[in-house]
Each structure stands twice: as structure tokens, then as C-alpha cells.
Length: 158
Image (cartoon, rainbow, N blue to C red; front, side, top):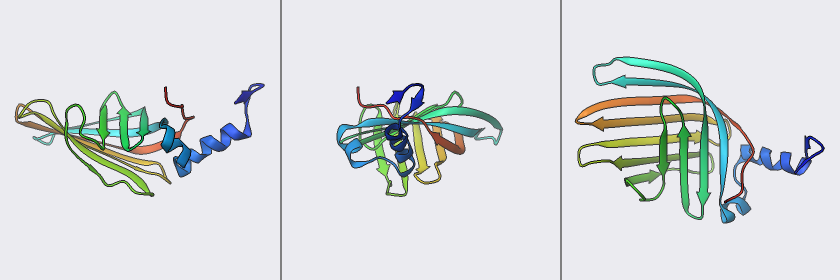
């Protein structure tokens, strides 16, 4: 709890657990971990034209029971991956382990339009790699974001 304008040792200890990532009690209840990420996004089309942008964005990791979703709230490259077939997710691969989150998912908008998405976050260094291959009307566009994230306080489930 915040007391007298300062964070208590308990709250700071829990925030630092972010770096070792999510305690068992957090898995049972489900919660959202928010990270602030300094990223560089490179967007390129099939012809090889590339544009690069730097920004600070928020990465949200939500774990509820066996469901994990990771959302990159980026103005240049917003993406969401999940380890379950929900909504438009037709295929997913969860290669996460104790060292990193690594989730890929394919989201189909139409039979010919799809997003192939992947987010990898190293749990120790907080290095982020996110990619999106979008196919719209048969035209491919590839976006890649790389950067480093920093922990912010967790919020309990709502």
C-alpha cells in the first residue's frame, strides 16, 4: 500500500517480483501485468519499402487460469496474441517457458485476410520482440517491433 506518499516495502517487493514474474498466487487469481516498453517499429511492404518509428508503448500480460493474452498497445503496431482459440484466433502456438513468454497466433478476418502475430518477452531482461505479418487483399505487410520493457505495478483482477 502507498503510505504517506511512499510505497511500502510489501508493494515494492511485489513490484520487483515482476522481474522474476508472476508468483503462484497471481496465477490462481489472474491478474494483468503492465510493462512500459521503449520500442522501435519497422514496417515494410512486399516491395521492400520500410518505415521506422520509435515510441513508448504499454505491454499487458493477462493470465487467468490457463489463458494467457499479451497485448502490445502501440500506435504503430497494436497486436494481441492469446494461447487459446477465441474470437478470430484460428491457430495458436504457445512456446512459453520459465525464461520467456512466446506466443504466436493467427487471426482470420476473412478467408483471404489474416494476421500472423507473435510476441516474445524475455522474463529476465524484459527484451521484447513482436512481429505481425498481415495479408490484406493478397498483399503482405510485415511489421517488427523490438525493444526493452520496464515493470509498472500490477493490478488485481476486476
